[in-house]
Length: 453
Image 1: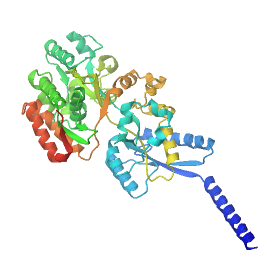
Image 2: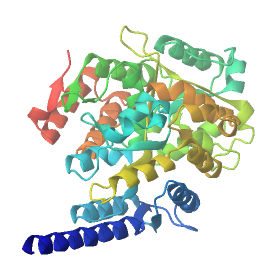
Image 3: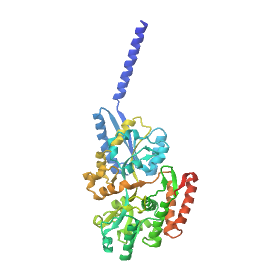
Image 4: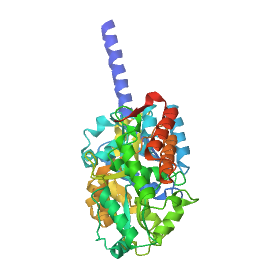
């Protein structure tokens, strides 16, 4: 009698449990997605695109038998405040499930365990094979992938075709090494008095543009870098660092192929754009932004016939053994998953939806830019923009990126100072590199620097 009563109670408990589980399964799951974008305000195209993707994702999940609701959390604040808000939310155990994120923040957030590693999902995501290896690296830190890149940019040499023709240099033009680049500069200097052959940013006045568009291009093309990703140490001396500085010395001191005083004059960057748009500078090393904004037909320094007058070439390797064929440096943004999410599988499905080819093309139509996926460059919508399609295919495979370490702003300043000391003749490349190594050691500590022989 007693055994029978126990069986009946147990059966009732099981039924109640099953009912509870069934109810839980039937309840809709809510995911929250956040971007520093708001309709009618900052990054309005991003906000409009996200709101378009949400019902598509919900429908796709419903077709798979899952009732998922997605809430968009808009934001229209400056990037540093957005970053701080995310850090506080995640540290407090909350925050949105899927987040639009600058790749530059990955190391800092990964160190704090504020990002969910995505590798277990990516290994079975077919689309992952469509990403350039360089883009995969930009979302990774210490062997784990935390971010899937959505868009990026690249850097190159913009050259004035008409000036090149006047100087007798055939176009299209693509130097194979530094010597061919310098030879083109020498020809322009000789044939076109009053035209500065090249603008390779230098000095503190140019700010981060000196680091990203100037020195890193020279250093990468020499086959070097400022940071050892394997050891986690800053490289403060190397043959490549010295070679890059010697290139600056050749251009600005020895042969005067660039305007050294322009680099250190007030509002140097604006002045250089004005000089380029009025054909007083023949070549300018810059990023995608220069084409799409600065010299665009409706840009601040517009070149109305930009598409026919201006050409572009990849920045060539130095030509020394071990140097790459071309060099570029990139930034960019993508999507990450909050480690606090209660639904990591669904969060990744949402991330995958946002990075699908169909979704990225829809985004590209609203906001054209360099895609992180290889296949997008050949899609009809993107291919119609020859500049974007061709620079993506030629330059993204060679690009690299800045180390997003907390010390980076101080490091970048030292890089700018390093170039300024050389182009103004204050120091030889060797002396400037000694000063850089000393300053870097003081900033990050002796245990965090290394010298490459």
